[in-house]
Length: 127
Image (cartoon, rainbow, N blue to C red; front, side):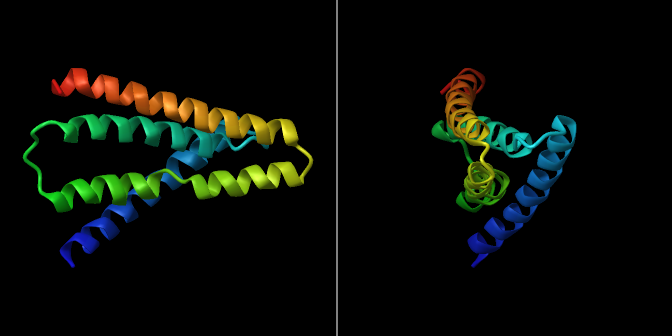
């Protein structure tokens, strides 16, 4: 039960962080392209890669805390469900170019961010 509580607490933190970063970025972008969701997904993917590298080594951390961070905080922070919904909305509105750009940028840049985060983590954490 403690593990579930830690995931829930981490999820609350991740959701609030996502809301703040996404809203702030979207306000800066000031357009119909979902830049806020893209920013959250890229940052979250980079953090996931960094955390994966850190936890790949012999770190002494309780399983509940690791899961709270990865599943709770980062799971709530990044959201491909919103990505899917916004992409479909763009396509339904006839903005097929923006829908395609969102798919390519979110996936391509997100995967690159995970890779870069992991590489950076292996250097920082000596894994």
